[in-house]
Amino acid sequence: QLQLSESGGRLVQTGGSLRLSCAASGRDFSSYAMGWFRQAPGREREFVAAITWSGSNSHYADSVQGRFAISRDNAQNILYLQMNNLKPDDTAVYYCAAVLSTWYYTGTHNYDYWGQGTQVTVSS
Image (cartoon, rainbow, N blue to C red; front, side):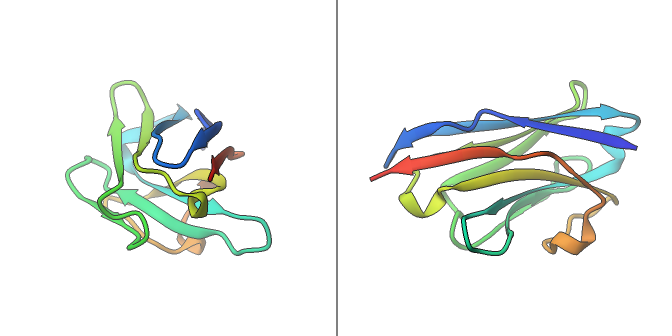
């Protein structure tokens, strides 16, 4: 069992930066691959970024490649998403998710545990 809790979302201007955090409680955080997803009003939840259990490999959606960076601190049980050069299209609720796997996935159906989400709003 793993509990996830996101934080760090807020209102930011276009071009600004934010760092989201996802704190995990439970056992064996380092055994889980982790992902970030987002959901805008009226749209399906979509993949943003994912990282392997060790942090050695990561993958990004084309829409955020080069602007966002996913990382993790297994000693502190925290997952991060550094978001730079934010755009209005990045406005959404951002969720972290976990799957008991060494490798990551990009599909929402692959993940077993989800946080409650944190709102990111980018003003134009």
